[in-house]
Length: 536
Image (cartoon, rainbow, N blue to C red; front, side, top):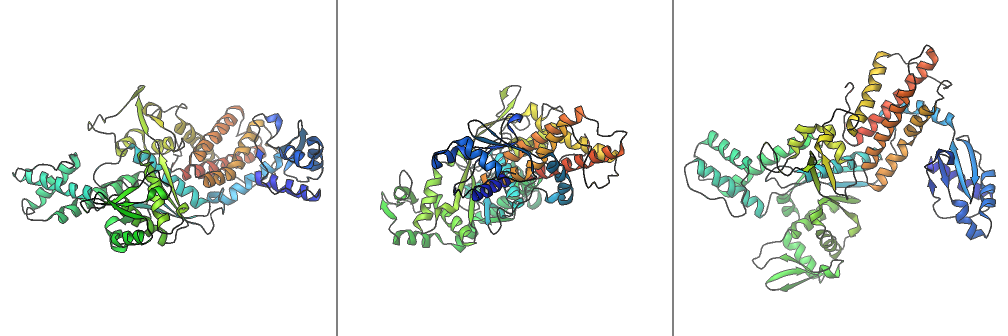
C-alpha cells in the first residue's frame, strides 16, 4: 500500500509538472482519525516551490483518483492523510485464499545469490544459548529472503583443523587410555565434557584395547564425526536444515594458505616483526595491525578465515552474511580488511553480531543446567520449552540487543506467553473451520462491517509489506511482532463478534475471512520456524 500511495503521488506530481526525485515518505499514523497512511510530501515541496504547503497538498489531492481509498484529506500544517477503502480490504480476502502458501511472497531478491553462515560451532562440545539465538536468526532470515525471491544457501563451517581439534583427539585418547587402565592426562587446553568420556567408553566397548596403536588422525576423525553428527541432529530438531557443510581441511586444499600469504606480500600488505608475519590491517580500516603467522610458524585464526571467505566469493555469491558472537566485534574489521587487501570488494561481507542471552527463571539468572551442572544447552532448552517457544522467543528481539529468555514465561500455558497467544489464535481458527468445513467462494463481501473485522483485514493486508521490510532490513523480529499483532486483532474480533450466525451468507463470509487469517498467520510463523498446532 505504501508503494501504491507513492505511485499515485508521483503520478499527481507529474500532472502538476512538479519534479521530485527523492523517495516520498509514507507514515502510519498512531491515531485512526489521521488515516491509515499519511505523507509530508507537501511540506517537503513547500520549501522547494516557495509555496504554501496546504495549497500544494490540495493540488496533489485534486489529482489523485484511486478506488483503493475511501478518503484522502489535507490537514494542517500540510499532511495528506489516506484512508484505505474497506472494499479493497475485503477484496484482499480472495487474493489470500487464491495465493495460499504464496501469499506475502515478493521478488525483491530476484537474481541475488546470498550465503548465510551461522552457528558453525566447533565440533568439540554442546550447542549453547548463543548458538540457539544465532541459529534462530540465521535460519529465519534465510526463510524470509527465500520468500522474497533470493537464492539463499544456508552454510555451516566445520572447524575440523587446528589446535582445538588436536586437543579434542588428545582428550579422547587420554580418556580411552584411562578406561584401558593406562595413566594419561587431558592436555592443558583439552576437553573434559561428559561427551568425551562417552566417546571413549563406546570405543572401548566396541574395540576393547585394540585402538591403542591408532594415530592422532584416527581419533580426530572419530571425535569430529561423532560430535558433528550430534550437532546436526540437534539443529535439525531445531528446524534448521543446512544446504552446505564446508570443511576447514577441504578449504586448505582448495586455497593453500601460503599462496594467500604470497599474494598479500606481493601487494605490499605484510611485514615481519618479532619473528612473526603481520598484516597491515591498520591501512585497511582496522585500528591496528594483526599477526597472520606466529613466530613458531603456526597460523592465526585469521588465515583460514580469509581462505574460507575467498572460497565463498569464488562460488559466485553476491552477498555473504556471517553471524558471529558479540565477542568477535574486533574481528570484523581485520577480516574485511584482508579481503580488501586481496582486491575483493569487502562490502560483499556483512557480519551480524549477536548479543548475549540471559536465561531467567523465578526472576534469577540461570547459568547452570540442573541436569548436568553445566551450561544450559540448546537441546535442554528445547526439552524444557518446546521448539516453538525457543524459536519464537529468540526471534522476538533484534539480534543486536541483549535479551532475557524468561523460562517461566516461555512454558506458561496462558495468554501471557506470546507464542502460546499466537498459536492459540491459529488453533482457534482451525477449530472453527473444522466444525464448519463447507466454505463457499464469495465474489463480493457485504456482511463484514465491524471495526474489529476491518482491523483484522488491515493486518492481513499489511503482511506483504512486513515481509518486504523484514527482507530489506534483514530483521526477522519484524515478522514475529507482526504475527503477534495479527493474533491480537483476531482475538479482539473473536471476543466481540459472532462468526457463526443464523445468516448463512454472513457466516460464509466470516469463514472465508478467518480462513484468510489462518493462511496469513501460518505463512508468517513458517518464516520464523514456528509450526502452530491445530488444536490446543
